[in-house]
Length: 401
Ligand code: FAS
Ligand code: PHB
Image (cartoon, rainbow, N blue to C red; front, side, top):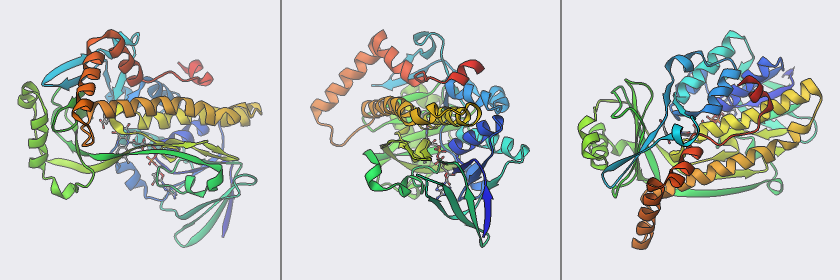
């Protein structure tokens, strides 16, 4: 067995783990990332597409915003299509100038991985049988790579290993409470090298179900359809996908839609999920390891970023200022923002998707709620301020911005 020592072990090399690693590196704090998949697999994953301003600021602070600044698309509004009519939500005018940036999670991951490689930081990819141990006293992580057993002794473990990871699963049941809502449908997503149907995102509420017209660039589009959770991606040919998308669009968008071969097609289940607390002795959960939101509010990746903003600041404070204040407040500060994003994501999902359980009365109430939100500045403002991202208290980020 090879024994290694470091300050922080990060389990998981998704956006949360990589971003934490980059921020610790910038602060000169020794750490190791341990990832079960290959680097190529991690870099190829296709997921989120919208960054809140605070996430952009954090990536700038981490020094990985060069490509983001060059290729990210600033968006100051979104459209809601209901009953064949598009309603623009002017995000910027309703939030004193805030905006979101369209920049794929795939690109964020690649930018972080490249920065990590350039800095020659220690990562173990394709690590098997990763286990976390003694995280209430003297934490260490063991894993197997290429037939060799490793033990990494550390001060803290950051569980950034996603919803299916082992960190949350290793917490004694009596020390953790989870909250979950599983939705009776999924999102069938298609990525295609075709120009977007519109300059801005279009969220569609139709009697055939939800649809979303998004993008990755001016030449690459990302589309989603609400489908039954029992559907299999093999049942959806490209032609069937494009035909169903057209059935959910208004005439103008239908006529503008450019179709083409999918370069990625997958069905993601939708759930709302929260773990309380998010700290267990010297083990911290961050990102999808701690919470999941339905992607309707574009919050998943952004919540991972805000957890890492708090966790990186807490660990930097511990090592550089010998203070445990941030560490002790981590869980409470994260959960305040997590639950607000959970509520917004649940609300957007409830409002825009078709639920088989909806009675005729439920449908009328939904239409009335949407009509109110779209028809009033107060209603539009509540949607806009949640969509661009609610503020969070980060001392060091304020210094950076
Ligand atoms: P991740 O799941 O990205 O990363 C966790 C990492 O830990 C992975 O690399 C995994 O291989 C690794 N890991 C797991 N178990 C391990 C173990 N035992 N040992 C070591 N490593 C281990 N969000 C949006 O905002 N918009 C979207 O449209 C959107 N679409 C999504 C579609 C899908 C199919 C999924 C699954 C998620 C989607 N999300 C979306 C949410 C997504 O973007 C997450 O919020 C984001 O990936 C969170 O990042 P991490 O917390 O780093 O978790
Ligand atoms: C995406 O582009 O993948 C995307 C955009 C907005 C969402 C969800 C996904 O709400």
